[in-house]
Structures are given as C-alpha cells and as structure tokens.
Length: 579
Image 1: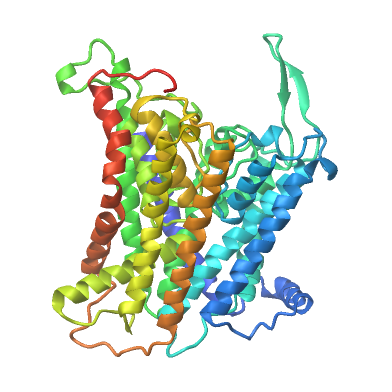
Image 2: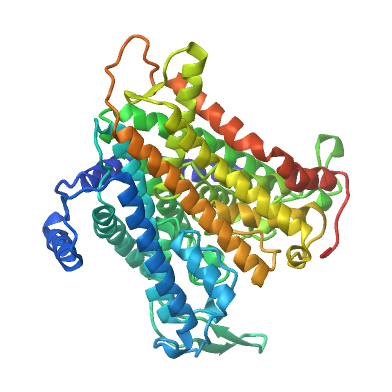
C-alpha cells in the first residue's frame, strides 16, 4: 500500500460525499413533482409523453397496481429486446454483418438487461450490432435504472405518508427519473468521455497491421453513449469484452475516477432524498454512514491483500516469518494505467453497487480480495447499491433492525413514526431470504451436475468460487464475473437468467407490499420511549444486522471457495487446470 493509493481513494470518497446532498435535494424535487432547473426545457416534453401514452400525472396507484405496471413494462421490454437480438441479422446498423443471437443466449441477455444485471455470456464486439447496442442494450440501461429508482421512491413514500392508499404512479416516476435525472447526467458524461478519447461513431471496424506484422481488427462504434449510462445506471454491461479495462471504454486515470463516481452518485444521493422526504436529513445520513463503514472496510481489505501479493511469487530475500510478499503486489489481471489502488477501489465500488463494470479481472484477485466482491453482492448490494435497489435493500434491513430493537426492550418497534408489525417484518425477511435461496440453490445444482462442471476452467476451490461468484452476481443483479467460467451454454444461460429474475422480482414484490402496508399506517408522535433511528446506536444496530443476517448465511459457502483457497495457497498447495 502507498500514500498515493490512499490519497486517490480518499479523493473518491470526498467527491461522493460532496455530491450526496445536492443530488439528494434534486432527486427530492423530481419525485415530489416540484420545479427544477430543467423544468422549463423538459416540462413540455414530459407533458407530451403523458398525453401520447394516456397517463394522468396526478393519478396515483395502489402498491399492487404500481407493481403490475412495473411488471408489464418489464415484460414488454424483455419481448422487444429478445426480438431485436434474434432479428439482428436483418436489421440496419450492422456494418460487420453479425448474425442473429442464439435463442438461449438471446433469452439470457434480454433477461440480463431488463433486470439491470447486464451479465454478458458473450464477447460484445463480435456478437452485437450497433443497432442492438443502441436501441436494445443502451435503452434498457436507462429504463431498468429508472425502474429501480422509481421503486425506491415508492418505498420512501410508504414510510413518510400518513394513512395513504397509494405509493405514487409508476409511469410518472419512470418518465421523470429518465427525463430529469438519467438523461441530462448521461449526456454530460457522454460528452466528457468523447473528449477523453472514447469513440462515438457508426464506422465499420478498422483493420491494421501491428509493428510485429500481425493483422489486428480494432472495433469501433457508439461506445461513449453506452458507457455513460452503464455506469450512472449501475448497469455495467460493456461495449467491449474487457469492459472498463479497455482503453476505448476507460482511456485515462480521470475517466477511471469519473466512472467510479458515476457508479456511486445516485445511490448516495438517494439516501439524502430519503432523509429529506422523511423530514429529517439525519435519517438519511445514518443510512449513508452505515453504507460508508461497510464500503471502507471492503476497500481497505481488498487494497491491503492485493498490495501484499501472491506468496507463490515471493521474493527470496523477504523474511518468511513476517509473511511472504510479492514485489510490487499482485498486478495479474490489472491495467498498469490504474494500478493496484484504483483496481481494488473499482472492484469494491462496482460490487457495492449493482454495477458489474470492471477495470481489472476479478478472477485474478487474491482469494480474500476476491471474496470481498462476493460478500458485497451477498449482502444484497446495500452498500450504496444499485440505483434504487441499494436504498430499498438497506431499508428492508432497517425494518428488521428496529424490530429486533423492539424485541429487546419489549416495545412495539417504530421507524419514522410507523409501527413495524408482523406484515412488514415478514415481507422484509422474505425479500432478504430470496438471495441465499437462489445463490446457494443454483450453486449446489451446478456443482452436482455435469452440465455445470463442464463450464469450469479451473480446478479446486477457485473453480467452485467461479460458480459461486456467477450465481451471486446474477441473483444480486450485478453482472461481473470470475472470467474462468464458460457460461455461454444452455445450462448456464437458462439458470443464470432464472437467478436474475428471482433476484429482481422476488425482492421487489414483497418490498412493494411492505411499502403499501406502511403507507396506510398513521404516524405516531415521538415519545420518550421512541428508539431514535438517526444516531450512532441505530447505525451500529443496523450494521450488526446486515453483517449477521445478511453475511453469516454465506460463511459455509465462502469457506469452500475463497477461504479454502487462501489457506491452500499459503500452504503451497496449487491447483492445475479444469477438473
């Protein structure tokens, strides 16, 4: 570890913290339907969209109606994207004449982008045409992100409204989020990336001859526009197979910093929006603090482990009693442009959020460092999290935390003046338990069946870790991967798609049910017996609940993978190729 590395990490933290309050205020105005700086320009566009679609802006929906609208929209998006993928060979803007995407891969990809996962079982630059990238994948990067933010706004309304029967209007939330939040920021980010050297064109691929005399094809395309929203919307699907490690997606150190800030910006801003809509910004800062502690713990462990390097490559002169060190740390799978500090930071950020973009290969991380991204996702990616999903995932844990606090003092638990009763606790627990059911269930299935084992390129605990990582990433709607798994097979395309659907919609439905239940409750006045939910005590309790309820569930599974690999590596036990 170096001082320079910590300075870069600190700079990132300062920027995110500085953006949280102004962005939170802007999000509050957008979802409350108040005027913003963009209202004069975008207000007529918003009203035109409502008129064309038959939406009444001031007509709100019951939580079930809200859920049905969300499901219908996502179903339509899935069908449309699947059709684009299957008919790609017949559609324009395909200068490389790429063929139709295979049925199982098209199904997996359509599910992936609709659920904001952006898992990619394919090499994008030799699989997807420009039209598919723009009208299919980039469009879904916008609307899937807007869906997540809208759902978070619905849950917040459930907490702050008094005896209400509605939680908002899904169509209005979707339009306002896309129009006022995602589009303006994405346009600015796109222009910045173009300035820094990211391509944005419709040209055919370029053939060149290298200095060694080898022919190389250099992919082109509308990269910057997809890059901006893949990060802002915590989508993560790259235009190139190397994702943000590719110089066309992430050409400079400043673009690397901006990309990480974009991943966290809205997730952090939503915590402040929650506090503002609750009438007490301290509530939002308490949530922000818990997220911040978990983030800092993750990045510190990852950076320390990667800086230590692999003991198998220890220099001879190192004192073995002090622990073997690899000179320069573990640079395998990393871009020299970014180094260990920024690679460790990016790996932590992208798995704290449900982004999945990478600037280094997670498969090459040291075992314990590779476990941190897995643990981040297993917690439900509530550490700032995906746009919307991070906040509502954290609030579900908060419901459990105040329920436990109530049990300890023998008092009916309350959160923001709302009594937390059996229905809300059941819905929160149901949403939390969905993740381990999918992650551990599908992992067990894959390691038992030959169709699952046939995709491994590595033996031993690391091979098992590749499978565990894949289903963790899919269920958590992240999309990053340990690259040693050959996932473009009917078995993995279908089971990973199922995991994505479970991780998305079987969490959303009980969350919306809890929102509807909370919205109908009266707000009880504060009393001397009210447990404060804006201070250090509550933050510590919430942190403990996340670690115990959300984390310890997976310790046995992690013990068979990265933990076992760590001890084997330090004992000098290495594994060969595929099993």
